[in-house]
Image 1 (cartoon, one colour):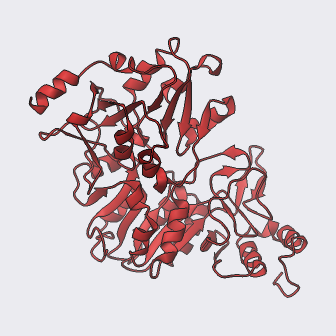
Image 2: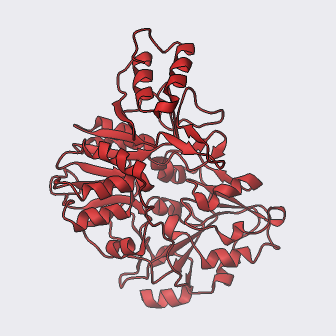
Image 3: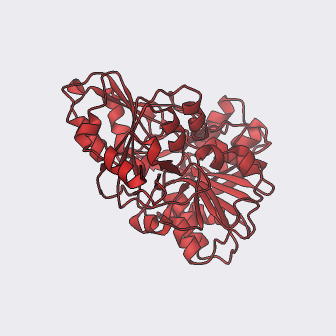
Length: 445
């Protein structure tokens, strides 16, 4: 049978495809841009027929239809490998939960039988002449997930970019059980405009980046500000090896800063585990041999990162205490995101020859009442989750300072961390450090 005939034989409607889901099933919705839409709506329409259906997703760019059902009558629960604003508020109704793990571990999580997958539903690009569908900008762990799935349903979307990769970026028609077609608009995550504080922090980081460095940028306005400022420098021959591909990399490439010419692995190629951004960025990724979509257990592997000289990792955090613990997933009990790849890149960058890991944040944050509070705190809030320990943190940067925390005693570390705090909060932090026995008489005031 030809691949075209096989395609027609497996083609069906979203409603018929969603009918395979049974009460008690675990259903995977794909990941980020590849999260299903038409199948999601069809499954939500079955709310009165089902009970206890557990759905797994990650980096949601929109709120799934199944999670718009009122909690009291919702048979679905959402279980996410990395939370975003699209699902964060759902935790309050007791029907949305985070799965804690380093992102690099997810493929193994599936392959070693920890993750049941009764039905997998994934948005993909159209089939090529050889019978292959592409996962778009979300390869990450989807091949591993499909290996575990009892039933695979592909939602073919002609708007999905075909993202070239070295491995595990595709799925074959012979692996699919059912196919539906739905040309929906892709979910976008446009880069937020950097604030003046973002630019001040970014400027301190940019000063530390040499020619031929390899970059990893995290999500948010601050890492994007670093990318923007790099376009204005004289730096050249930069490389990219990043968990998340963001719009700033497009700017860096188009202005000639990124060549990958001196990258020891995947030379000339920008390697990434997933991408989320603007339509302009998706168009840039489409069928572009300069880009390499790869599984996250390769992209985030500490051993891989260590093999790349001058690896520069730039990420955000929510809160830092005077011990140097980094809480990047939650603010107290309020869950915000997830472990992601932060620890992998903190460790990997430090192991790289000439490598540096930067954890960046604004020195203060405004509450709903407009009151400013310090992100530099004596101890983390109750319930706060430590993403990188005090033994792992390398560089900490705010608009007021840039400090290297490696190898310092507790009093040295406290002193340097306080030097990055907003001046209005430093006296209080010093008094608390004294109570905690991590402040010496000779420390600077």
